[in-house]
Length: 178
Image 1 (cartoon, one colour):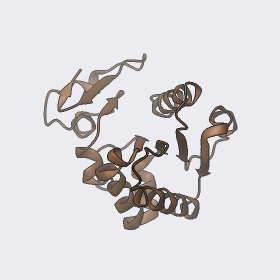
Image 2 (tube, helix red, strand yellow):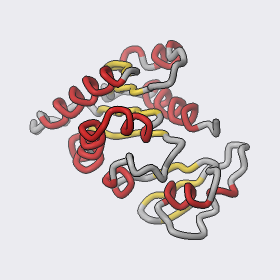
Image 3 (cartoon, helix red, strand yellow):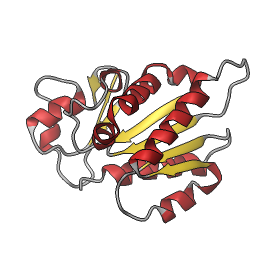
C-alpha cells in the first residue's frame, strides 16, 4: 500500500497519547490483520473495533445514536470514528451505512463526532457526497489522474498522481491544495 492505514493509525495514536479531554475512538477496520498493537495504543479510549459487516453496522448505529442524543450544554467527549477502507465498507454494508457516514460528515463536527477515513478508491460512487464535500484530505500517492482528481476534489492539475512513495503527501482543505 501507500501508507494510508499507517498514517491514520499514527495520527490516532498521537491523539490518544496526548488525550486530556476524554476523546474516544471507534475503529472500523475490515482488513484481516491483527489490530492488537494499535488497539492497545488506544486501549483506554477505544469504544470498539468493528471488522465484519454486522459489527460495522452495529457500531455505526451506536455512534450515530450517541451523536444524535447530544444536546447538552456541557461539551461531551469527542468521538473520532476511524474507518479504514471507506469505499469498501460503504459498498459491503449498503445504503444505511453510507447514509450514517454521510450524516456524521454533515453534522458531526458541531456535536464533537469526527471522521478519519482511508480508502484506496477515492473516486468510488459508494463514498457519500457529504464526506467528499465536508472534509479536509491528506492525499498520498494515487495510481492515476482520475483518482488524484477525486481525492483532492479538483478537476485538473492536482499533481497527486506524481507524488512519490517516499512519504510525500498533499493536504487539501478549504478548497486549497498545500
